[in-house]
Image 1 (cartoon, rainbow, N blue to C red):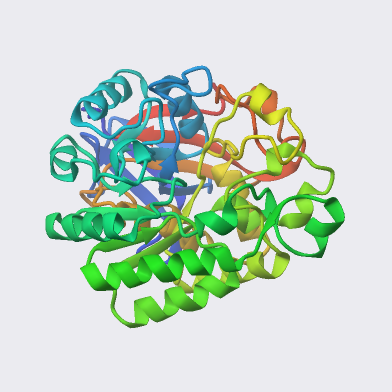
Image 2: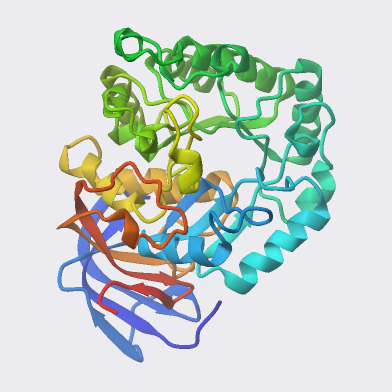
Length: 424
């Protein structure tokens, strides 16, 4: 992905997630990396717009193999670039499951051939995500897996999970958990409460998240494994997360941009584009989780990009498939947090770029000399109305359809090469 062309970005507002600062200045890139200032073959006048490290999006579902009609590596790469995402860390919940070195190598080849942004695959923790037999973690690491997860297929057999965590810990592998009690969550479409009762929808208590997290944290403490909770969305779970971090456990946590910007009332007219997993929470939970990102308690923001076709969404709410696309809307949705004063721009890019790169052992996420020239140039104030039919993803299941958004990606660069230009 390298390039021999040097580019000088001048007159930019540089968003530095390491120093948590925004400064006016310039950045030079050469041979695919950020370099020291100097003359360049090409100069880009940023005109006072913001330049930040490209987003590193964790938990992206690309539906290859098995369901290319929902999303391919080509369409996911185009959507990512348009959303300021320069690296995607992909999920293993494909058809078949990515649980063998052969399947992982197939996915890696497809990504290299077709995807406009960097890709790093996660692999399943257990075979076929059935929670009964541990996957070949060592071989999968050798084949390029950056983490291991069964996603929302929560492992219920504690012995199997403890063995997998022990083995992963010995190999230095990162395990991603989905902290929900599967028994309580089974069949649920929304979060329990007065609103769910009035709508007559099957619901799950927010306590299911805390119960699931309690179990996972206890096993992480017992085994010493590196553990990341994919989504923490409730106040109750935040207290447990804080306790685990205070105890020095090797634990981090993420949250989806949808849980940071939407709440349970958004499903009022049974719009299935708002059906995601875990379900949207109360406004109190949403605000608390936003503050947890600001304080650093929650480490990572992700899109949890989950493409679903029209047929699976055009169902009664409780029967419809869960999930929403989020690659292309990631940065504009984050700007809602910026404009409402919940997060500063450096805090957003700390959680969306720097922290995921560090946690998953990747090189990106900063503007430091020597870092990859993965950059996004954007205008946080540019308004537009989102039209889902114009999204670059094959699937169009976004909850932001028809909504007024602020924040537009102008250009995206991967290894110094322009992969998206809004003006083009």
